[in-house]
Image (tube, rainbow, N blue to C red; front, side, top):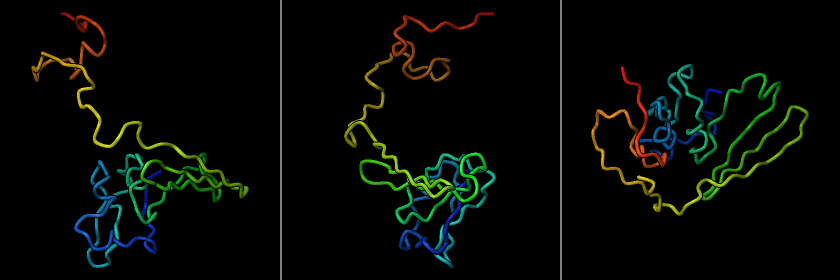
Length: 147
């Protein structure tokens, strides 16, 4: 479901250098048109469909191009991001509307531990192990294929 900007709702994040969707897009597809002061998805075909831009937009000016099996014939799925949760409003094609609320995080902001509490002595950048392996796997060593 590639995202697109609803131009009537977009205010360019009130004239800042970067919009919220530009900060959120991991593929750098969002762009601020300085003449119109509107955000634009430069290449919807390259969209990863992660919906980061849709969830980050403070004006709810982003929407999704839904697939026929997910949002057929006029249905929609719109997120509303709050400070502690995301409310998804799903409008079905028969007119029925349902809302689902999910928490954004399970820990206080700024309290996440980057290493997850696992201390790893191996800092070899050429190692095949991930950052916290093998301790996070609760193994003495990670098995690797030997030629």
